[in-house]
Image (tube, rainbow, N blue to C red):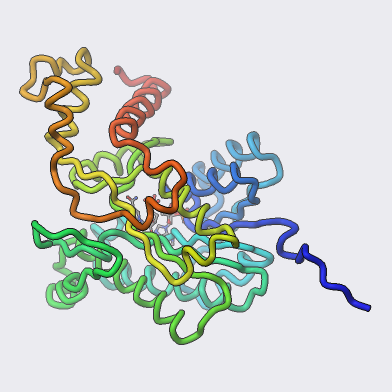
Length: 346
Ligand SMILES: NC(=O)c1ccc[n+]([C@@H]2O[C@H](COP(=O)([O-])OP(=O)(O)OC[C@H]3O[C@@H](n4cnc5c(N)ncnc54)[C@H](OP(=O)(O)O)[C@@H]3O)[C@@H](O)[C@H]2O)c1
């Protein structure tokens, strides 16, 4: 007589697919999953790159036999992910254009964001082992570019203006709005898929502000510098933790069919300069700069109101978000060691 085992086939080997694993958030997400004891199968458009080799070497040493990368040259092709999701228990879909959206224009950017998401959902839908799916959306899918200054945005808001703006301006549309439109379109496609196909796995969207911390290479340094021009931040380590939380089957009731804003820190450039002047009085002669200041002045930089409410996502993390000053100082330290390793003067 057949007996039901409490250990299903899928429980034997938790396996996370992380698309865009070479990326800024992707590598951190893979690391967090590996640290949680989960095998990771990343994807990249080209597995012959030095970035892929570096990741395999790095994770191979720390987590032998638990990390691999599969090549998916075009994520929009039907069936592109069929082999990738085989035996996977959880999927984090992160691959997609960010900085290239600034130059590529609307059509290719939106095409990849929407169809890449739909293709991996289709593949997941055919694979019985999949228990949960996390889509990395963005706070840009929530708050419009020209937002109401006095308003606080939450999970129930949508950036209603980006797609119309892109339709109006076409190829002349600003890259940042093209990016926002691609995230709105892809996340809407995700929820439409859920409504129409009712997948048995849980589905969660995470909507981070601008991720910061860490730098494994020049691309990430460039990204941090671009993002410092924004205002609403989250530590990328917190975002990776949210993915891990949403990937645990026993958290399904907390995360299924929900979106989570993750933009807990609001910090204008002036305030960043003030914090850095406080922590690094000797570097860059901040002491003589107009930003040099006391602890009280640093604390005053926190009185600015955050444009986002991240209460739902903070509830998911056991210890709350990493304090902003720690993120900032850790980022500076990571940049210094990167520059030192690469023999720049610091
Ligand atoms: N960074 C942030 O602050 C932030 C904030 C909110 C939301 N997000 C979202 O989080 C996800 C990851 O962001 P990230 O900062 O880690 O980006 P990233 O560093 O640019 O990594 C994304 C990865 O996606 C792959 N990719 C890029 N363009 C692609 C394309 N046209 N087709 C298929 N794959 C492509 C690339 O991997 P290969 O070259 O190896 O294929 C790249 O490493 C994105 O969906 C982004 O929209 C990021």
